[in-house]
Length: 266
Image (cartoon, helix red, strand yellow):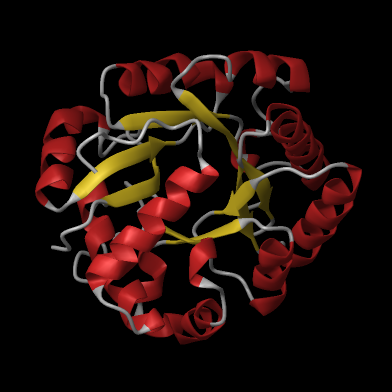
């Protein structure tokens, strides 16, 4: 366990697999050196629960938004609604939003409309937009490029599993790239090679719990404590100590999510 605190920059504490034992998950996270977690909103219809979890724990903040899987099912939101919901001190980002053309759970047009709405809310609030993208690199790049030209906004590509073009786009717009347990998988060598070229001051680490548990827990429910395994692999990729990786990625997180209240002990 590194001496410096780790941050799980993307988890779903209110999803089945974690919601049943949030206190236990947070306790195990603390034992693993994970001092702060960002719990991600995916539906406005259950945002109250996500917010309540953040309100109940000093070391948890949250985001508000509609996941691309839900963008054809949830009522369409608008910029004003999202910005209004960010007024709460515990809401530190917008999303998760983006494009998922792999599962195609929602029409592409609905996903793109929702993505642009969330970006506009991020631009207005200057809170980071959390971007999900799968099998949609080309459109994701095009939309980020177009929208950044209208006015800059902060953001992060979460659970990065794309190619070098998207990494270059994100870094070029001063957005972060968040690494999940995928980087520990044997099949992920192309992703590791892409990540290696990203400046370290753009890197975050995450679990996406309860999904995508890293090796050695692959196939089991993921939880925030396991971000330590992802961080250890990231330290290998960047050829630095786990302690430096923890320090750098934690500093990156609180610089990007500047509204989040950093625990005093760090």
